[in-house]
Length: 251
Image 1 (tube, rainbow, N blue to C red):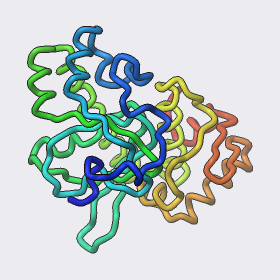
Image 2 (cartoon, rainbow, N blue to C red; image 1 turned 30 degrees about the vertical axis):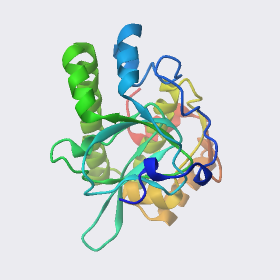
Image 3 (tube, rainbow, N blue to C red; image 1 turned 90 degrees about the horizontal axis):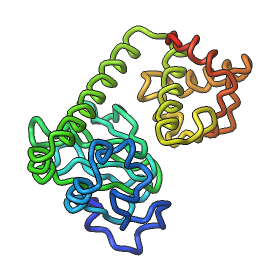
Image 4 (cartoon, rainbow, N blue to C red; image 1 turned 180 degrees about the horizontal axis):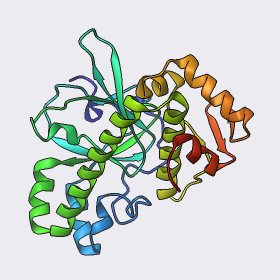
């Protein structure tokens, strides 16, 4: 693989909002990432196995489908998308990953990544070698339990996506994605109602099984209903209850 972040030179990167030398103890995402389950002494042990490299540039791959599985990754800043390549060579977006979230777990079962991960903007990640994490988890039941919870959460989200794509209308799909981003922002102590979409309309449509034109029409309808204010990628949710109603999600 030619695009691993460890092979890039310093000149290839723009500065990251988070210092790549930061540790788990002082990272502002520690309350939602793997350190959540650990006390200070145990966090130090986790920190010793974490590898922090220079940020990924927009469009750069973290790993590619079929690459040997060696590590899982925690997003520290920026956003990445995961995608699979179909038999006819097209991309199928399978997920978006925000700061504090773990990706790369798709490689655990077969020791090879089942999808690719590419940065949507300048992004920094913590690389956690899986063999080292497994050994540490055996000594720290809380870490192991939390990691299993993260895996379970990923499985649940995948199942929700399958349900979303098989049954729901275009409006429901878009509304559900906005609610997902809203709640993930809230977990990071960011605004749940005013945020920038890091992904393009093309990626949104690909992920939700909709055309770009349909995605744009849904946003326009929500604006006319005074539920959203949309300015290119800037989104302001004016009526969170209204979005939940459209998404058919109970309060």
